[in-house]
Amino acid sequence: MLPKTPARLTLPHGPLALPAFLPDATQGVVRGVDATDLAACGIQAVVMNGYHLMQRPGSTTVAALGGLHRMAGWERPIITDSGGFQAYSLIRANPKHGTLSDRGITFQPEGVERKYQLTPEKSIQLQIGYGADVVICLDDPTHADDPPERQRESVRRTVAWARRCRAEYDRLIVAKRLEPAQRPLFFGVIQGGGSRELRRECAEALLAVGCDGFGFGGWPLDAQNNLLTDMVAYVRELVPPALPLHALGVGHPANVAACAALGYGIFDSSMPTRDARHGRLLAFTTAPDATPWHDPWFRFVYIDDERNKKSDGPIAPFCDCLACTRYSLGYLHHLFKIGDSLYIRLATMHNLRFMALLMDRLRARANGAA
Image (cartoon, rainbow, N blue to C red; front, side, top):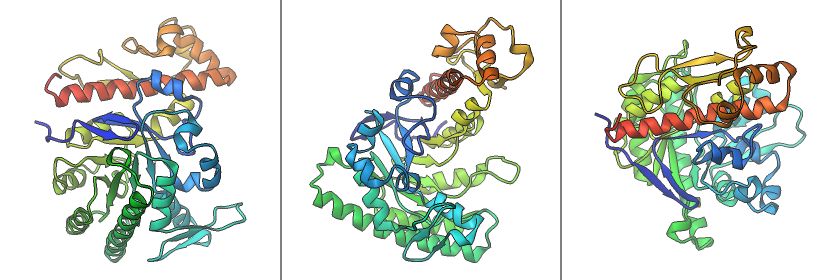
């Protein structure tokens, strides 16, 4: 029996049926496809990233182009990530690229002349200015190997920043006179590493701040890339069922299905689109509406495999995407070999359609139909 979690979110740019997979349009675009392609694949919403957007094309350019939706030609919901994880990762890889303090994050990427400052207030200002449907608090991420004192500092700072984010969010809602239907949802991020005590402390403090939903903070995989099922499940238990949980960065189909079974409703990752560009395609082993699910219920198709060279069939027999209904696996193999950009578009649409069909299947399972 699945936890009774929200079946949908009502957002300024339309409803979001849950569970939902959101491809990463990190810099304002899902590489190789446009808004029409995304809609054709059944994608309901996308995730964009404040860290990247504030650098390129830049906040003033986004504003001049009418906000993210108009700029990208995308009329459906957009979730914006604060960019804290990306800034943290940059600094962790090389401390000369910036500093992280209670005030916020200062960073300067390699080859960039200017320094950027990302405070809790600035993060919310950017996200609301972009026209996001869901804004995510700036948080202080950690690595799974960080010592307990660093994990405690992360929770303390994450909670303090969430309070500042909330204050700025409330101020902007009033200043911009946003009606309830126009207001983006406000998500916090639950940090705490591998400590149940810290996870609980963080969740309880963020609930007191007043969040509309939450993200699972920190990397949800172990060193062998196995899902940290126990901790992922525990964080779901800490959040009231009526509030949605976003499995940040989770995109492997098996992990998406496992997290959905635990009550997570939102997923985002660059994995399906990145894999498509590099020649790894997704395929169901049975019809997407088949019941019960068989194991293994999906497989990978490697387009570069010479066995595909003269294959006249589709990538996957149970897929209704443009690539599978109009073109052969052999033709996709040919496009990949010659490096034609059409391959990237068709392969990306295929993997995104797989994820959309997976979400259909997971929603049916949640409703007891599969």
